[in-house]
Length: 208
Image 1: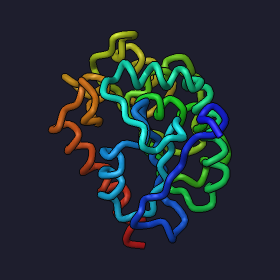
Image 2: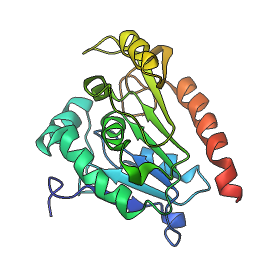
Image 3: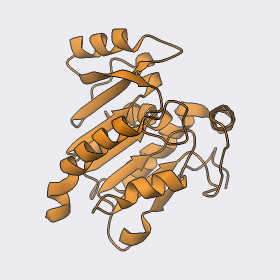
């Protein structure tokens, strides 16, 4: 089955026996070793959603990854396939983290009643959120944007989302992709800052 008909989901290896509590929605690079390492830092069962069926697919450049993503149907297709995962696991999911295209796909699903059980969704630099500003999430959502984007002005988007009572913020001095080691915009210091915040956020559920 191609990725155009099914989004890929894989469990964190160390937690595969338990229902997933944390949903991680990847960017256009898909389910990379960096994502696997990211997931292992949480003491929660994780479900990883990727736009590709080939779990071992690796793209040496962001441009190649983007073109592959568009060929699979882009954000719209990703969001549609993600909706099935959210509904399938809605009983156990409590947190969701999305990156770039994954954040946009997660945002498009955020009004789904199946998201209502989530304690929080954290969306990093979801560029296409700008095209769907009127979405009203069914769960608390934190929208985190890079200060520098090529296609739009993040400061304007953040200001507009705040006017709409959304929890949106701008990371000063950052570029798109600051959480991903494979991205040209990666920033280790910023990644470490948000990694700590995410671990603190999910610590209570891990201890429960």
